[in-house]
Length: 340
Image 1 (cartoon, rainbow, N blue to C red):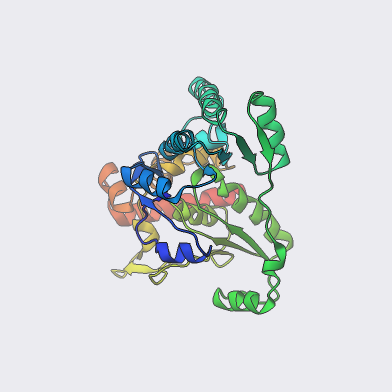
Image 2: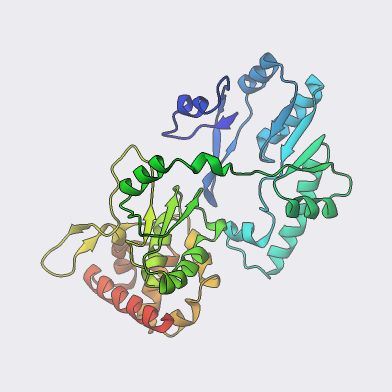
């Protein structure tokens, strides 16, 4: 069972596992985390489980569906299994709330979430840990919980098909001479992909033919392209291999030009979720931004860390969009020179 997502073809999902059936339930969006939906139990979902008559019930996230899974397991008298999915209660996960790592609120929430998580997992017949490190950590924290380590391994032989590899390289314009680093997964703020791009910029110094490929999508995709632009990684070096039903539009494609400064798609991107503001503490940009002049600093903050478009910034500070564009470009050049 999983929450409904717009554009997801459930038949394609079921095709991955012969005999599998997916029951879609209503999903509730989390206001501070646009990449996530909480599945909501319904009488239909409970009825489907009872009709299926499972021998084991497994839940993947400790949300509303996790509580339903626990109730159904008790009702049907079958074992209840779960997988420890993520350290959402640690500072790296709390970044979605905009909390600083050493703040009082962060420490209080961290302790509270660990206690709640233990209460949720303790009744389970087994809690699967995906790595030895996670297993050891959970056993130290949860003395009364049955933690079992079952590695979530990747079968490398599945990727040994050179013909498929060649097709992918051709599709995304990657030559055989290029060293490709692949990152596969949801592009979300708590995964700190900004650090990956920063590290990749260092790799480029020694291996100029290297390419970083992101296989996935998410709310921070545009922000990652901002970061790559700021620290001087050419957009050709970072490939976003997004499978989509729509044609991909470059963020750097001009959408208007009156003979002066062009307006690009990237200039009109807006992030209403304010997720990028937390990158200030994780990148070496902070000191560079502090050195900017007042108006330049304000524009960079409004554009990249509060997700406003250039037109919105222009209205807020009382200048034209063209002036915002020029000041933004100057500020980015200053930051780039400062970092390099």
